[in-house]
Length: 408
Ligand code: SAJ
Image 1: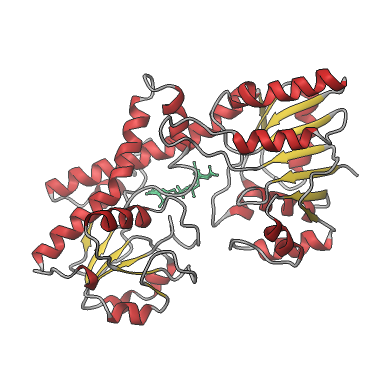
Image 2 (image 1 turned 30 degrees about the horizontal axis):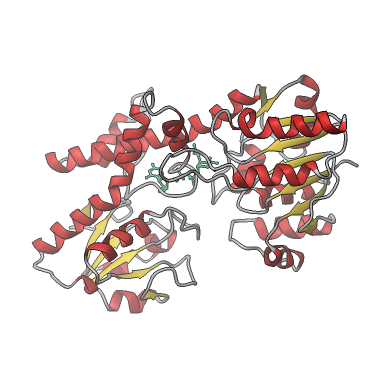
């Protein structure tokens, strides 16, 4: 049986390694983080995701191996972080290059290296291909390259791994068929084969499209606030047109995908990506916009004490425990810099402290505040809405149907 080595056991690598193993593939999951590997060997996950615990059990029953060292395998899936440089907005390929170099130390002749990490268009030609070509020229072996960008939505990862169509970028038909067969072991949807550069761009385009669409909704939200018109009503009815599909406004765009990937296009093509750049700016402006809404509401209620304000939700979206690029954290950053004093904060999805003075009990949190700002629409708040009666409410996610609720 063919062995697959999954390099990087984070948000994408781990579910991918597990689903492959659960479907009978011989998998070695590799990570440089000793503690993570030790925990996985003991059956402990580093993050929560619906169904991931059961998948881990299945993968372990099928003999998945967790290790710190990369081993010889027919195929490698690289799922390491690919951050961007904050100033230049360009990709920082350091982890990717390191992972490829480590793989090249053990990769056999005819091995296939599949990059799953999201990368800026041109990354494989610029950084990955040259080191692989050098190795091949030196040792006389042949190594094939593929790009199989992931598409799964946190919160629905396992369902989407099985049901989302996939894009596969390859150089030749043989590699395409080999990689397609591997992904078909768990993916029931269509697997479309294209070239590597197109696959790189398709991934970035998908997330950029969503970012631009959300920016449009956020801009509409600001216009409607000025006009005193209900933006949700506008979007709901406009979306009844068969060719209109506007997303929802909100307190900002977080996560490590939609708020990051468009920057790759801006970084590489600053003169050509004006709309994309502006969309990023609009979405980044939303935490400030929420703050100014909150300030106006406090003034209206003659309220001065920010410590009687409570912020609900620290994660970047509902029903997950991921706080990367979270709009609430962006807002806190501004408050800390400008006001010194902090509002109270609570998130039912987090039992660890992320910001000072964080509450871990909803009732105590509510007892200490007069004004609640809902930043995340967790199922928890929908189920406990009645407890908010009597509070001033700023609902940035349109989850609260009570009277006299302020919206963004
Ligand atoms: N958001 C809004 N309004 C909306 C929808 C989302 O403000 O109408 C906000 C969310 O609250 C969140 C942010 O946008 O802060 C991003 O959330 P998301 O659910 O749209 O996306 P992610 O980042 O969790 O996952 C995205 C997905 N991409 C697309 O839907 C095109 C996912 O399929 C990708 O796999 C993932 O990025 C990735 O890894 O690239």
